[in-house]
Image 1 (cartoon, rainbow, N blue to C red):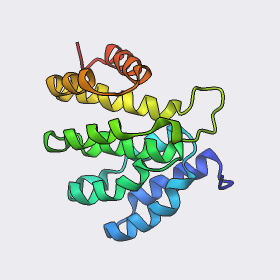
Image 2 (cartoon, one colour):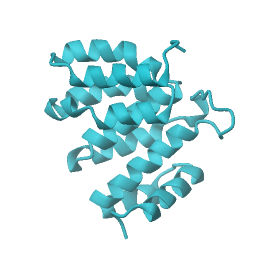
Image 3 (tube, one colour):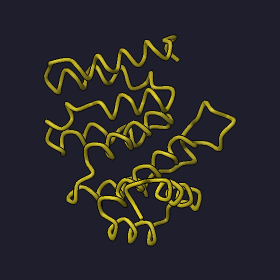
Image 4 (cartoon, helix red, strand yellow):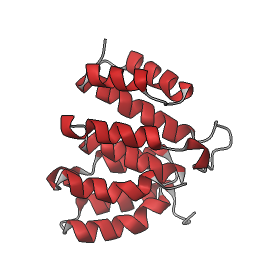
Length: 169
């Protein structure tokens, strides 16, 4: 979409993560960067290395992520999911994050990957978040998944991720 190679997009994101700047400045940079995310590897590499997010008030980060949860672009939604998994996986935020996952309308999310059921990378991000939550909050995560309206495909992917994890039994 932006004519950048994989490497250019990755370096751009890692540079944004490394900058010493205010969160307002970083959010401005991110607003132009996030639409360039076009694959899971860059999205996840950026998100998992955004250690600056640990210094933000959780509410500030959440307010920045909300529009991306409502995007119709697959990797913008995945960005919000993975950032939530990495930096909002706290007891006091669990129900908020779970509620946002349940509210996602997968049918409205566009994917450039026609070889996968759309939007595969959002569904896999949801499964990854849930498997991570299971390791940290097993009872709350099981209760949420069992009582949720998540699609059977997301539940199946979550179960697979949880089985493959070395952090859960």
